[in-house]
Image 1 (tube, rainbow, N blue to C red):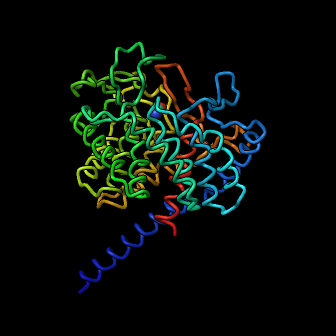
Image 2 (cartoon, rainbow, N blue to C red):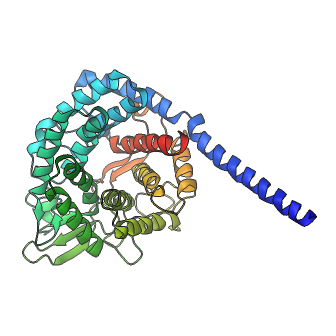
Length: 400
Ligand code: GLY
């Protein structure tokens, strides 16, 4: 009897301890008032952006705010996307008006067929707008952008081409049909369009692209290559390389995060178990990588040569946290301790800027592209966007 009582006591104590532990982990993010702080910071950024009528992207090497290019910029959807998340959080029309105003600056880019980033650009902006307002006009915009994106699909390869190879640095690589792991992020727009329009052509392309990428882009340890170049006539893989990572065989941190997020989204729409398995495998690669710092914020490349003297990439951490919150809901794996750790770390003064500093971006210490000597240890509008998304997802998933 005493033995049983003892066991009962131990069980109750452990349950209470783990409950308190989980509670304290959860409340930390709330106590840090991460969303409130983020809203205050972006309110300041909004004032500057409204005056300039430009979209903030990052801070340049002179320490000045750097705006997105007016003719097209793959990051232009993120600032209005952040405004939509803040509208969802505050219900304040100020954020809805801001989102509408800033996304209208690039609406005519829906016709562009020269890059694969339309999924990112339009789903984060007009896509969130439709989710929150039901404005049917936005479906028209999304459909045009989706049709432009489909024009880059090659059925022989089974992929959407990422970059054109006629201009810029990409023209010096001898590529024919480059496909980057980041391209998995453009599939959400296509899945969503089939749901919105009933036309299966969008999700058919998304599924084929995801399957081709699953077959070719991953190594046996479930990390991914950055760039695969295909022969557009035969569909054969010509080379496996990097553009933004340290080396062809290294694991570029943001690329791993894009793959994780992309396959989680594919599972959301298809319930195909292979996508769930791949997302879980990528999650394990990221979380168990021996070079991952204890605070969960990765260096810009898992194989960067001078660790620990290498820049972190906060954008990769924010994308990963957001994806893992969704993935946690689909699987018996428990990602919450890792998510708690990453979000609580991002909310500290090490990564979250003081109000009014950092050109009013929320987070510090991201990396755009070290091989291009571009955007090293800077704020980035997409780090802020995925951080806000993660905080909103966390709030709904765990705190409400
Ligand atoms: N898609 C570009 C990047 O992740 O830098």
